[in-house]
Image 1: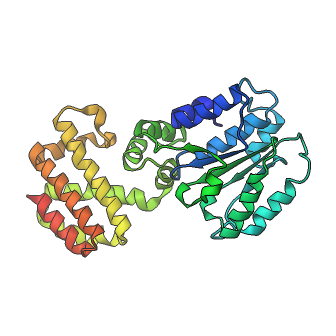
Image 2: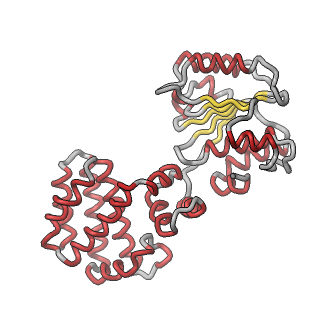
Length: 328
């Protein structure tokens, strides 16, 4: 259950602009929420809809307990309409159906709200129908268009919307929200270091493949520390069978890079910056093996490996070369 205080932590500027629209009684007829996946666009749109419909709100803050708030939570409010892609796109018929719905008087009040998810996926015909809808705004109608790519929205639609830019989430914000979602402290810190996308972080936390990827990174470190002669064997027999796709290999290298960064943090007594907080003993063993200079060289080698993967150099060759470099 989101509040405006929560939203101000996630997206301070966008949240404050919407709260101000209630304070000044200047709710626009159309908004364009633009930002990456997982930055809070859908949560913000739901909260804004609650603030519009809630009859017991305190300023802009909805009560969260009334019939309107509960029905919005359950997706059953008769005057809140959602449009999402039908397959790969949002089609003209979906917008026509929406227009037909809006010719009727609101069932609960005169207000109506519609939210278009992935608005960039509207077909040309759907976009043109929506434009006609926006050209004749009703004071009692509010639209929210949610998009990851505002540049692909028709300029004529953009010009009729109030643009709200959703910024990438900060690591400490993601970490805190993940813990609130029930993610362990150690996993939350790791995930927040890997992505500024809340949705992606939660998906990774539930992904068995990612859990095994994390284990393999630590196993690689242990092999390099204790059995360096078996490094290439480990890469070919355990690492590469798991990291089959280039995107997967990039993710594995990202995690490996965080370990080397942690070694540098440990050597510089920057405890608060360490990501692998649950692996302190193994991290201590690593700093006995790698000096600050060699850890820094290791980081450079991992970055170079990531660059080669992007350039389509053969993955096995890249990892074998990286393993030899990290053994030095």
